[in-house]
Structures are given as structure tokens and as C-alpha cells.
Amino acid sequence: MFTKNVGTADKTVRLIVGLALIGLALTQVIGWWGWIGVVPVATALFNFCPMYRLIGVKTCKVTGQ
Image: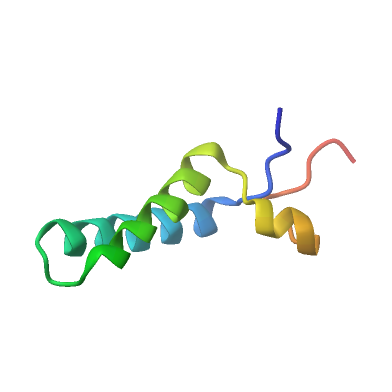
């Protein structure tokens, strides 16, 4: 399906930031735009970031070389 391009540290940061934004949106500390936190959570769970693919970035370890 998609080639993994999100590494462990990147994944952790994405989950923390995404969940924080969603939590802040749920508690109405920030507005509806906090739901954008769904994007980093999804990219962390799928280990794939479409923007990374467009710009040629890969933060995971390269295997098989």
C-alpha cells in the first residue's frame, strides 16, 4: 500500500501533538481548528506522511541495503 516514511521519534511527536490538539478541542480550550490533530495522529498510526513523500523526506531507518 504505502511505503513507511515516518520513524519512531517522529511518530511519537505526531501522536503527542495530535492527541493534545484533539484534547484541547474537546475541552473547548481552543476552537474547532484543534480537530486538525486528527491528521498527525492518522499519519503516526499509518507510519506514512503524504507530505514527506512529496518532498522526499524519510525519517524511518532504511532496511535491506
